[in-house]
Length: 178
Image (cartoon, rainbow, N blue to C red; front, side, top):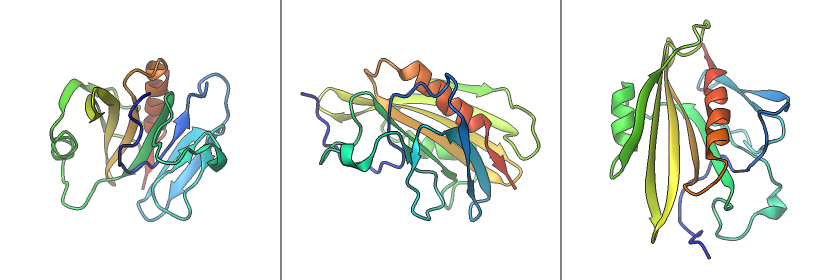
């Protein structure tokens, strides 16, 4: 049995969903942090008035006590830069404390007004228990309104990792700020 009782803050839970195969997408807006993004309609929102995006694709009755992510689950968080972070590079350094990157690259901006002027993808993994790893992919966005991050977390052995990354990139590409 896998070690699934790590303590971490989970903002978005998801069990694999073919969100890129015809799902309609819903728009989330944070008036306080001045951004909006789209996400698959098959994932249920659970924001409770918070300014961060929180979505998952299984009901609360399917939560298991102490399990943060189901074996094929994932989480996505979307939010504005923390206080004191002024550059994408500074935010990446903060996120990567005690981790090594496996990929860092600049992606082409979609050029839309209010979107990302600069979009940086970073991938890394970290050990949450003995020989148990989470894979992380974060898309850091520099817009005229500030810095934003779309972060995907899933079990490193999740066979749907590539498709989950495509969903997270689509969420990041939908980001609008004001």
